[in-house]
Image (cartoon, rainbow, N blue to C red; front, side, top):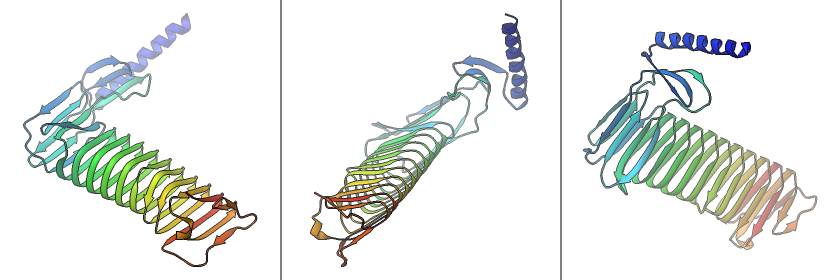
Length: 334
């Protein structure tokens, strides 16, 4: 029992000390309790709505620690909410939104739920035609869709990104840590990079596709690319009903499993991992150079035995150049 009261006293004293630190560093005298712990903050709630926005051509959002969502509506509008930060925003034909520095101090945390609950919602008509859409968050989820734009730039340090129903000339996604989901996208150039996180692309069409993934799996489903370039350090790469006119994939550690129509030159190298390639084109339409250092080769269901390389000799328009430092290579023709 004495131990219990000692812990209570330690808890109270610790709270008072940290409260003092919070006040000295600029927080107001607002102290409250929520499901994350004991909080001291500015206590200001900022909730802004505006439905009187005219047609918008460009959108620039720096959301800080907030989620960003585009909502399909019958008008242009904006809604901003934050418990512990303020917003700076302006609009004419360009909408600019910036979250000012958060002023919250957490005295004692019981879980990892963020203290602030803030968001940016942009309302726009379906298939609105925009010029530039530029969205950045430090820590927050991004959900965009239902519009056309010349250029779409997305950058997030921590948070998931969901893109659905976007037509653009250029689409750039730069993530540090988070999941990416892309559905029904039609773009000229798609450039994607991520340090930590899985990515799934479904029904995506691009003239040029570039992906640089440090750690995470990458899935391509019903995707059609003119020129495909993928670099992966750690993670598997899979493609179903995948169509590409030119393909270059370099995987340091992870398997590559592609099924679809692979025309033009297809270059795939794995450091550590198997390669399975299933193409809808006939075997006679391909030339090939296949080599493994440690692994086996199976070509059109025929096992190569102890051979570490296979070559057709001549080079045709559709050429397979497959290699692996440590892994099996299996090529199938439907």
